[in-house]
Length: 191
Image 1 (cartoon, rainbow, N blue to C red):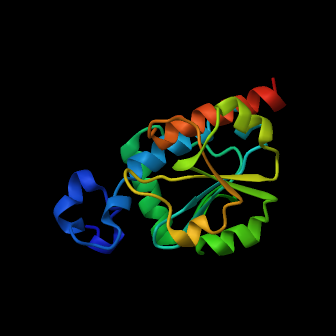
Image 2 (cartoon, rainbow, N blue to C red; image 1 turned 90 degrees about the vertical axis):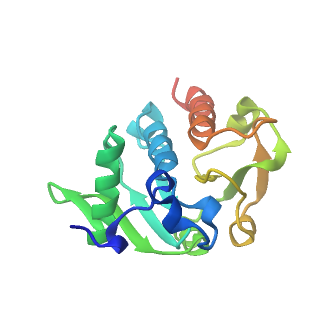
Image 3 (cartoon, rainbow, N blue to C red; image 1 turned 180 degrees about the vertical axis):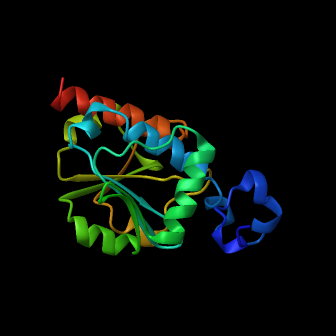
């Protein structure tokens, strides 16, 4: 049996336990991260090693996703994988690290990957089309998409953005934003 500290928080199951915790509206949605990762890690841009993927968590951990990782399509298998990752620190296969989690805040992640441009995607940003944003991206751009159901980026995260843009007048789900922006970028550099 798993200890409570070994269970991935999911608001669908743990609503009562999450009530009143800090930033509760930004927690407990691993399904959003799952959808977003499936969008980012199942496209030619990723398979051709032209996309690096990281997940920064609210508790200042970073999940490093290696190249050509095939993530489980089943949500329950994904949850099990992430719980194992939190427990062991790494997911390996054939002596290759597929996923790794490290204690790291957003600032340290940016220092490590050293992007030339950091673009945050938010409803509070300047309205721009997917196509125009894709034209302004290059291999040294870091796109930051919030994986939370409600709320906005923290000031600690926003201060690193070179610019903040919105690609739709409506709030869209993270996986929709990821799929549309990456598709437009992919068309420009691969197709």
